[in-house]
Every structure is written in C-alpha cells, then in structure tokens.
Image (tube, rainbow, N blue to C red; front, side, top):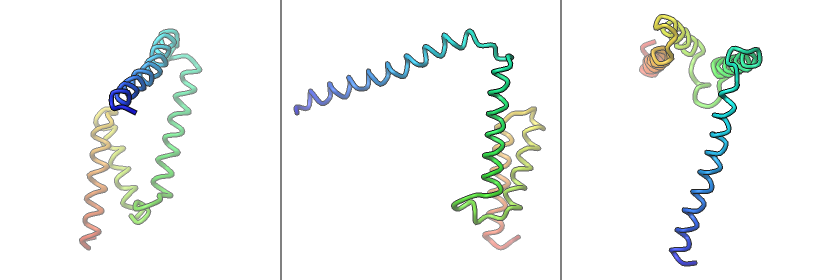
Length: 117
C-alpha cells in the first residue's frame, strides 16, 4: 500500500468519524430546543443523576479500592467535609470546594506519611 493511499484513507476516516459525531450533536441541538428544562421528565433525570453521583461519592469514600484504600477513613471524610463547607461558602461553586478538599486530603496524607499525625 502506498503512503499516499494510507494518508488519504486516514483523512477519509477522520472525515467520516467527524461527520458521525457532528450529526448526533446537530440532532441534539434540534431536540434540545423543544425540551422543557423545568418539566417533570427533566427533573426526574436531574434527580437520578444526583442520586448516582451521591452513590458514587459514597462508594469511593466508604469502600475505596486501590491506593485510596490505604488512606484512613477519617482523612477522606475530613477532606469531604471541608469540600462541602467551601462549596456552600462560595455560593455553590465547584472549584473552591474541589481545590479545598484536595488540599486538605494532600496535607493530611503528607502529615501521616511524615509521622506528624
């Protein structure tokens, strides 16, 4: 197979993949204009999404796997608590809560590794 055919085939594949993605996005834009975001179906999907997220966070915090399993539950819960407090103090903005929780967790983990606590 010549190099020119291979390059042409890859560009053609890129165009087809892009078109398939953008067709679905365009369809989503057309449908989204007709969806009532305050309707009961939208509220149900929102509740299900929040419920799944709460379950995932609970699972990660209470029954972690991998390297997180080696950290004490108290450290994970302290970081989570600080993250929630910062989230609400900063008018429900995710970034301060996320950064604060990460910083607390890193500080506690570092202090434990150095034997300070």
